[in-house]
Image (cartoon, rainbow, N blue to C red; front, side):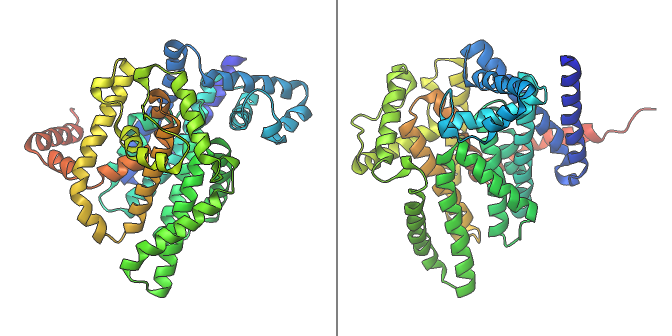
Length: 431
Protein backbone atom coordinates (compact mmCIF):
# COMPACT_ATOMS: atom_id res chain seq x y z
CA UNK A 1 0.00 0.00 0.00
CA UNK A 2 2.83 2.39 0.86
CA UNK A 3 4.51 1.67 -2.47
CA UNK A 4 1.27 2.38 -4.35
CA UNK A 5 0.72 5.69 -2.53
CA UNK A 6 4.32 6.75 -3.14
CA UNK A 7 4.02 5.85 -6.83
CA UNK A 8 0.83 7.91 -7.16
CA UNK A 9 2.55 10.91 -5.55
CA UNK A 10 5.58 10.59 -7.83
CA UNK A 11 3.38 10.35 -10.91
CA UNK A 12 1.48 13.44 -9.77
CA UNK A 13 4.66 15.47 -9.19
CA UNK A 14 6.24 14.54 -12.51
CA UNK A 15 2.90 14.88 -14.31
CA UNK A 16 2.46 18.47 -13.06
CA UNK A 17 6.09 19.18 -13.96
CA UNK A 18 5.59 17.81 -17.49
CA UNK A 19 2.51 19.98 -18.05
CA UNK A 20 4.37 23.01 -16.67
CA UNK A 21 7.41 22.39 -18.88
CA UNK A 22 5.32 22.23 -22.05
CA UNK A 23 4.06 25.77 -21.41
CA UNK A 24 7.55 27.31 -21.20
CA UNK A 25 9.16 29.41 -23.90
CA UNK A 26 12.05 27.87 -25.78
CA UNK A 27 14.42 30.41 -24.27
CA UNK A 28 13.99 28.92 -20.77
CA UNK A 29 12.71 25.40 -21.48
CA UNK A 30 16.23 23.94 -21.59
CA UNK A 31 16.74 24.99 -17.96
CA UNK A 32 13.51 23.50 -16.65
CA UNK A 33 14.40 19.85 -16.12
CA UNK A 34 17.93 20.43 -14.77
CA UNK A 35 16.57 22.96 -12.25
CA UNK A 36 13.64 20.68 -11.39
CA UNK A 37 15.93 17.70 -10.80
CA UNK A 38 18.41 19.73 -8.75
CA UNK A 39 15.61 21.06 -6.53
CA UNK A 40 14.10 17.66 -5.81
CA UNK A 41 17.49 16.07 -5.21
CA UNK A 42 18.37 18.91 -2.85
CA UNK A 43 15.30 18.14 -0.75
CA UNK A 44 16.32 14.48 -0.53
CA UNK A 45 19.91 15.52 0.18
CA UNK A 46 18.82 17.79 3.01
CA UNK A 47 17.05 14.89 4.69
CA UNK A 48 20.12 12.67 4.28
CA UNK A 49 22.41 15.34 5.72
CA UNK A 50 20.20 15.69 8.80
CA UNK A 51 19.89 11.93 9.08
CA UNK A 52 23.57 11.00 8.76
CA UNK A 53 25.51 14.18 9.59
CA UNK A 54 23.48 16.13 12.14
CA UNK A 55 21.78 12.88 13.34
CA UNK A 56 18.72 14.90 14.41
CA UNK A 57 16.97 18.10 13.48
CA UNK A 58 13.75 20.00 13.07
CA UNK A 59 13.05 18.44 9.69
CA UNK A 60 12.24 15.02 11.17
CA UNK A 61 10.49 16.51 14.20
CA UNK A 62 8.21 18.47 11.88
CA UNK A 63 7.29 15.38 9.92
CA UNK A 64 6.79 13.22 13.01
CA UNK A 65 4.37 15.76 14.50
CA UNK A 66 2.61 16.09 11.13
CA UNK A 67 2.27 12.30 10.92
CA UNK A 68 0.60 12.26 14.34
CA UNK A 69 -1.99 14.71 13.04
CA UNK A 70 -2.44 12.66 9.88
CA UNK A 71 -3.30 9.75 12.17
CA UNK A 72 -5.81 11.96 13.99
CA UNK A 73 -7.44 12.71 10.62
CA UNK A 74 -8.02 9.01 9.99
CA UNK A 75 -9.74 8.46 13.34
CA UNK A 76 -11.32 11.85 14.03
CA UNK A 77 -11.42 14.24 11.02
CA UNK A 78 -13.19 16.90 13.05
CA UNK A 79 -10.35 17.05 15.58
CA UNK A 80 -7.83 17.33 12.75
CA UNK A 81 -9.64 20.29 11.18
CA UNK A 82 -9.84 21.91 14.62
CA UNK A 83 -6.06 21.53 14.78
CA UNK A 84 -5.69 23.25 11.39
CA UNK A 85 -7.83 26.23 12.33
CA UNK A 86 -6.80 26.61 15.95
CA UNK A 87 -4.77 29.68 16.90
CA UNK A 88 -1.06 28.63 16.71
CA UNK A 89 -0.28 30.65 19.84
CA UNK A 90 -2.41 28.24 21.86
CA UNK A 91 -0.85 25.15 20.31
CA UNK A 92 1.27 22.37 21.72
CA UNK A 93 4.83 21.26 21.16
CA UNK A 94 6.77 24.32 20.16
CA UNK A 95 6.60 27.85 18.91
CA UNK A 96 3.76 29.16 16.78
CA UNK A 97 5.89 29.26 13.60
CA UNK A 98 6.85 25.60 13.95
CA UNK A 99 3.25 24.56 14.57
CA UNK A 100 2.12 26.49 11.50
CA UNK A 101 4.65 24.60 9.39
CA UNK A 102 3.54 21.29 10.92
CA UNK A 103 0.02 22.09 9.73
CA UNK A 104 1.29 22.55 6.17
CA UNK A 105 3.28 19.32 6.29
CA UNK A 106 0.33 17.42 7.80
CA UNK A 107 -1.78 18.13 4.71
CA UNK A 108 0.72 16.17 2.60
CA UNK A 109 1.01 13.49 5.28
CA UNK A 110 -2.79 13.06 5.22
CA UNK A 111 -2.48 12.22 1.52
CA UNK A 112 -0.23 9.32 2.47
CA UNK A 113 3.16 10.86 1.88
CA UNK A 114 6.15 9.56 3.81
CA UNK A 115 9.03 11.86 4.75
CA UNK A 116 10.71 11.62 1.36
CA UNK A 117 7.53 12.11 -0.66
CA UNK A 118 6.68 15.11 1.54
CA UNK A 119 10.15 16.48 0.84
CA UNK A 120 9.59 16.14 -2.90
CA UNK A 121 6.24 17.96 -2.76
CA UNK A 122 7.63 20.87 -0.74
CA UNK A 123 10.67 21.08 -3.01
CA UNK A 124 8.39 21.07 -6.05
CA UNK A 125 6.30 23.94 -4.68
CA UNK A 126 9.48 25.89 -3.98
CA UNK A 127 10.71 25.12 -7.51
CA UNK A 128 7.52 26.45 -9.10
CA UNK A 129 7.87 29.76 -7.26
CA UNK A 130 11.58 30.02 -8.09
CA UNK A 131 10.98 29.33 -11.77
CA UNK A 132 8.18 31.90 -11.81
CA UNK A 133 10.49 34.64 -10.52
CA UNK A 134 13.34 33.49 -12.74
CA UNK A 135 11.18 33.89 -15.86
CA UNK A 136 10.03 37.37 -14.86
CA UNK A 137 13.56 38.58 -14.11
CA UNK A 138 14.87 37.13 -17.39
CA UNK A 139 12.00 38.82 -19.23
CA UNK A 140 12.31 42.29 -17.71
CA UNK A 141 16.12 42.63 -17.54
CA UNK A 142 17.92 42.41 -20.85
CA UNK A 143 20.63 39.77 -21.00
CA UNK A 144 19.87 38.51 -17.49
CA UNK A 145 18.86 34.90 -18.21
CA UNK A 146 22.14 33.38 -17.07
CA UNK A 147 22.42 35.54 -13.94
CA UNK A 148 18.79 34.87 -13.01
CA UNK A 149 19.21 31.12 -13.55
CA UNK A 150 22.26 31.02 -11.29
CA UNK A 151 20.61 33.14 -8.58
CA UNK A 152 17.16 31.59 -8.43
CA UNK A 153 17.59 28.07 -9.82
CA UNK A 154 21.13 26.77 -9.39
CA UNK A 155 23.03 28.55 -6.62
CA UNK A 156 23.86 25.67 -4.22
CA UNK A 157 22.90 27.22 -0.86
CA UNK A 158 19.70 28.70 -2.28
CA UNK A 159 18.66 25.36 -3.76
CA UNK A 160 19.68 23.28 -0.74
CA UNK A 161 18.20 25.41 2.06
CA UNK A 162 15.16 26.28 -0.06
CA UNK A 163 14.13 22.63 -0.44
CA UNK A 164 12.73 19.82 1.65
CA UNK A 165 10.89 19.64 4.94
CA UNK A 166 12.08 22.92 6.50
CA UNK A 167 10.34 26.24 6.96
CA UNK A 168 12.68 28.02 4.57
CA UNK A 169 11.46 26.01 1.56
CA UNK A 170 7.90 27.32 1.77
CA UNK A 171 8.95 30.70 3.18
CA UNK A 172 11.29 31.28 0.24
CA UNK A 173 8.57 30.18 -2.19
CA UNK A 174 6.25 32.84 -0.78
CA UNK A 175 9.00 35.45 -1.01
CA UNK A 176 9.62 34.55 -4.66
CA UNK A 177 5.94 35.01 -5.50
CA UNK A 178 5.84 38.38 -3.75
CA UNK A 179 9.02 39.46 -5.54
CA UNK A 180 7.48 38.55 -8.88
CA UNK A 181 4.34 40.58 -8.21
CA UNK A 182 6.48 43.49 -7.00
CA UNK A 183 8.64 43.31 -10.12
CA UNK A 184 5.57 43.40 -12.37
CA UNK A 185 4.30 46.46 -10.50
CA UNK A 186 7.63 48.25 -10.88
CA UNK A 187 7.67 47.43 -14.59
CA UNK A 188 4.12 48.82 -14.94
CA UNK A 189 2.67 45.42 -15.80
CA UNK A 190 -0.63 44.61 -14.10
CA UNK A 191 -0.40 41.24 -12.30
CA UNK A 192 -3.14 38.75 -13.01
CA UNK A 193 -5.89 38.13 -10.47
CA UNK A 194 -4.38 34.75 -9.57
CA UNK A 195 -1.06 36.46 -8.85
CA UNK A 196 -2.78 38.86 -6.44
CA UNK A 197 -4.41 35.90 -4.70
CA UNK A 198 -1.10 34.03 -4.48
CA UNK A 199 0.58 37.19 -3.18
CA UNK A 200 -2.00 37.49 -0.38
CA UNK A 201 -1.53 33.81 0.52
CA UNK A 202 2.25 34.27 0.39
CA UNK A 203 2.13 37.19 2.82
CA UNK A 204 0.09 35.04 5.22
CA UNK A 205 2.48 32.09 4.90
CA UNK A 206 5.74 34.05 5.14
CA UNK A 207 4.38 36.07 8.06
CA UNK A 208 3.60 32.89 9.97
CA UNK A 209 6.88 31.18 9.09
CA UNK A 210 9.45 33.99 8.79
CA UNK A 211 7.83 37.20 10.05
CA UNK A 212 11.15 39.08 10.12
CA UNK A 213 11.60 38.47 6.38
CA UNK A 214 8.25 39.96 5.51
CA UNK A 215 8.54 42.79 8.05
CA UNK A 216 11.61 44.04 6.22
CA UNK A 217 10.48 43.07 2.72
CA UNK A 218 7.05 44.72 2.65
CA UNK A 219 8.06 48.25 3.77
CA UNK A 220 10.84 48.25 1.17
CA UNK A 221 8.76 47.11 -1.78
CA UNK A 222 5.77 49.27 -0.80
CA UNK A 223 8.06 52.29 -0.54
CA UNK A 224 9.47 51.69 -4.02
CA UNK A 225 6.03 51.08 -5.56
CA UNK A 226 4.61 54.28 -4.04
CA UNK A 227 7.63 56.38 -5.02
CA UNK A 228 7.49 54.94 -8.54
CA UNK A 229 3.79 55.79 -8.88
CA UNK A 230 4.07 59.27 -7.33
CA UNK A 231 7.12 60.25 -9.36
CA UNK A 232 5.40 59.12 -12.54
CA UNK A 233 2.23 61.10 -11.80
CA UNK A 234 3.87 64.24 -10.44
CA UNK A 235 7.05 64.14 -12.54
CA UNK A 236 9.30 64.32 -9.48
CA UNK A 237 12.97 64.99 -10.38
CA UNK A 238 15.30 62.03 -9.95
CA UNK A 239 17.36 63.86 -7.32
CA UNK A 240 14.31 64.05 -5.03
CA UNK A 241 13.28 60.41 -5.38
CA UNK A 242 15.87 59.20 -2.90
CA UNK A 243 14.76 61.71 -0.25
CA UNK A 244 11.13 60.72 -0.78
CA UNK A 245 12.08 57.04 -0.60
CA UNK A 246 13.95 57.44 2.71
CA UNK A 247 11.14 59.43 4.36
CA UNK A 248 8.41 57.04 3.26
CA UNK A 249 10.46 53.97 4.19
CA UNK A 250 11.04 55.36 7.68
CA UNK A 251 7.30 55.93 8.13
CA UNK A 252 6.42 52.45 6.91
CA UNK A 253 9.03 50.89 9.21
CA UNK A 254 7.39 52.59 12.18
CA UNK A 255 4.06 51.15 11.07
CA UNK A 256 5.62 47.69 10.61
CA UNK A 257 6.99 47.81 14.16
CA UNK A 258 3.39 47.59 15.38
CA UNK A 259 2.71 44.32 13.54
CA UNK A 260 4.59 42.02 15.93
CA UNK A 261 5.53 42.41 19.61
CA UNK A 262 9.17 41.58 18.85
CA UNK A 263 9.40 44.55 16.45
CA UNK A 264 8.29 47.18 18.91
CA UNK A 265 11.06 49.83 19.20
CA UNK A 266 11.42 49.10 22.92
CA UNK A 267 11.56 45.33 22.37
CA UNK A 268 13.41 44.61 19.11
CA UNK A 269 16.90 45.27 20.46
CA UNK A 270 16.28 43.10 23.51
CA UNK A 271 15.11 40.25 21.27
CA UNK A 272 18.23 40.53 19.11
CA UNK A 273 20.55 40.45 22.13
CA UNK A 274 18.69 37.59 23.82
CA UNK A 275 18.90 35.49 20.65
CA UNK A 276 22.56 36.39 20.24
CA UNK A 277 23.43 35.27 23.76
CA UNK A 278 21.43 32.06 23.36
CA UNK A 279 23.30 31.08 20.17
CA UNK A 280 26.70 32.01 21.59
CA UNK A 281 26.11 29.99 24.76
CA UNK A 282 25.24 26.84 22.75
CA UNK A 283 27.97 27.15 20.09
CA UNK A 284 31.69 26.53 19.90
CA UNK A 285 33.80 29.67 19.94
CA UNK A 286 35.01 29.12 16.39
CA UNK A 287 31.50 28.71 15.02
CA UNK A 288 30.08 32.13 15.91
CA UNK A 289 30.52 35.80 15.07
CA UNK A 290 31.99 37.65 18.06
CA UNK A 291 30.92 41.27 18.60
CA UNK A 292 32.65 42.26 21.80
CA UNK A 293 30.49 44.55 23.94
CA UNK A 294 27.21 44.21 22.09
CA UNK A 295 24.26 45.38 24.18
CA UNK A 296 20.60 46.31 23.73
CA UNK A 297 21.14 49.95 22.72
CA UNK A 298 20.83 51.52 19.29
CA UNK A 299 24.32 52.96 19.58
CA UNK A 300 25.83 49.53 20.17
CA UNK A 301 23.83 47.89 17.39
CA UNK A 302 24.75 50.61 14.88
CA UNK A 303 28.43 50.39 15.79
CA UNK A 304 28.44 46.62 15.33
CA UNK A 305 26.32 46.62 12.16
CA UNK A 306 29.24 46.93 9.69
CA UNK A 307 30.91 43.85 11.21
CA UNK A 308 27.56 42.04 11.19
CA UNK A 309 27.07 42.90 7.51
CA UNK A 310 30.58 41.81 6.55
CA UNK A 311 30.32 38.58 8.54
CA UNK A 312 26.80 37.80 7.38
CA UNK A 313 27.71 38.20 3.73
CA UNK A 314 31.19 36.68 3.55
CA UNK A 315 31.97 34.56 6.61
CA UNK A 316 33.10 31.96 7.38
CA UNK A 317 36.22 32.70 5.35
CA UNK A 318 38.17 29.80 3.84
CA UNK A 319 40.72 29.80 6.65
CA UNK A 320 37.90 29.57 9.22
CA UNK A 321 36.46 26.36 7.74
CA UNK A 322 37.22 23.24 9.76
CA UNK A 323 34.50 20.92 8.44
CA UNK A 324 33.43 19.88 4.95
CA UNK A 325 30.09 21.70 5.11
CA UNK A 326 31.69 24.86 6.49
CA UNK A 327 34.29 24.71 3.72
CA UNK A 328 31.54 24.49 1.08
CA UNK A 329 29.86 27.56 2.58
CA UNK A 330 33.22 29.37 2.71
CA UNK A 331 33.78 28.67 -1.00
CA UNK A 332 30.43 30.24 -1.81
CA UNK A 333 31.18 33.22 0.40
CA UNK A 334 34.56 33.73 -1.29
CA UNK A 335 32.89 33.68 -4.71
CA UNK A 336 30.30 36.22 -3.57
CA UNK A 337 33.03 38.45 -2.14
CA UNK A 338 34.94 38.43 -5.44
CA UNK A 339 31.78 39.16 -7.42
CA UNK A 340 30.81 41.97 -5.04
CA UNK A 341 34.20 43.63 -5.45
CA UNK A 342 33.94 43.29 -9.20
CA UNK A 343 30.38 44.66 -9.24
CA UNK A 344 31.50 47.86 -7.49
CA UNK A 345 32.86 49.05 -10.83
CA UNK A 346 29.24 49.25 -12.05
CA UNK A 347 28.22 51.85 -9.48
CA UNK A 348 27.93 54.47 -12.19
CA UNK A 349 25.61 52.23 -14.22
CA UNK A 350 23.39 51.85 -11.15
CA UNK A 351 23.12 55.62 -10.68
CA UNK A 352 22.15 56.10 -14.34
CA UNK A 353 19.85 53.08 -14.62
CA UNK A 354 16.10 53.41 -15.07
CA UNK A 355 15.76 50.56 -12.57
CA UNK A 356 17.46 52.42 -9.72
CA UNK A 357 14.54 51.91 -7.35
CA UNK A 358 14.55 48.15 -7.89
CA UNK A 359 18.29 47.96 -7.29
CA UNK A 360 17.96 50.19 -4.23
CA UNK A 361 15.21 47.93 -2.90
CA UNK A 362 17.40 44.85 -3.28
CA UNK A 363 20.41 46.51 -1.63
CA UNK A 364 18.44 47.80 1.35
CA UNK A 365 16.63 44.49 1.84
CA UNK A 366 19.83 42.44 1.64
CA UNK A 367 21.73 44.73 4.01
CA UNK A 368 19.00 45.09 6.64
CA UNK A 369 18.06 41.41 6.75
CA UNK A 370 21.72 40.37 6.75
CA UNK A 371 22.54 42.68 9.67
CA UNK A 372 19.48 41.54 11.63
CA UNK A 373 20.27 37.85 11.09
CA UNK A 374 24.00 38.18 11.77
CA UNK A 375 23.36 40.02 15.04
CA UNK A 376 20.58 37.74 16.30
CA UNK A 377 21.88 34.46 14.82
CA UNK A 378 25.69 34.60 15.04
CA UNK A 379 26.18 30.83 14.58
CA UNK A 380 27.67 30.22 11.12
CA UNK A 381 25.74 27.00 10.56
CA UNK A 382 22.35 28.47 11.40
CA UNK A 383 23.16 31.70 9.56
CA UNK A 384 24.00 29.85 6.34
CA UNK A 385 20.46 28.43 6.44
CA UNK A 386 18.61 31.58 7.47
CA UNK A 387 20.35 33.86 4.95
CA UNK A 388 18.54 32.04 2.13
CA UNK A 389 15.92 34.77 2.70
CA UNK A 390 18.15 37.30 0.94
CA UNK A 391 20.87 35.25 -0.77
CA UNK A 392 19.23 34.71 -4.21
CA UNK A 393 18.62 38.45 -4.57
CA UNK A 394 22.21 39.22 -3.62
CA UNK A 395 23.55 36.64 -6.07
CA UNK A 396 21.53 38.11 -8.94
CA UNK A 397 22.60 41.64 -8.02
CA UNK A 398 26.31 40.78 -8.16
CA UNK A 399 26.09 38.44 -11.18
CA UNK A 400 24.03 40.59 -13.54
CA UNK A 401 26.37 42.25 -16.05
CA UNK A 402 29.31 41.64 -13.74
CA UNK A 403 32.52 42.74 -15.54
CA UNK A 404 34.53 39.78 -14.21
CA UNK A 405 31.95 37.25 -15.41
CA UNK A 406 31.75 38.95 -18.80
CA UNK A 407 35.55 38.91 -19.09
CA UNK A 408 35.77 35.20 -18.25
CA UNK A 409 32.83 34.34 -20.50
CA UNK A 410 34.48 36.04 -23.48
CA UNK A 411 37.97 34.66 -22.82
CA UNK A 412 39.51 32.49 -25.61
CA UNK A 413 39.51 29.32 -23.51
CA UNK A 414 35.86 29.63 -22.54
CA UNK A 415 34.95 30.54 -26.13
CA UNK A 416 36.60 27.32 -27.38
CA UNK A 417 34.75 25.25 -24.78
CA UNK A 418 31.44 26.87 -25.75
CA UNK A 419 32.13 26.20 -29.45
CA UNK A 420 33.00 22.58 -28.69
CA UNK A 421 29.79 22.04 -26.75
CA UNK A 422 27.77 23.75 -29.49
CA UNK A 423 29.26 21.39 -32.11
CA UNK A 424 28.75 18.39 -29.85
CA UNK A 425 25.09 19.22 -29.27
CA UNK A 426 24.39 19.91 -32.94
CA UNK A 427 26.48 17.13 -34.54
CA UNK A 428 24.53 15.12 -37.15
CA UNK A 429 23.28 11.68 -36.28
CA UNK A 430 24.96 8.69 -37.91
CA UNK A 431 23.24 6.43 -40.43
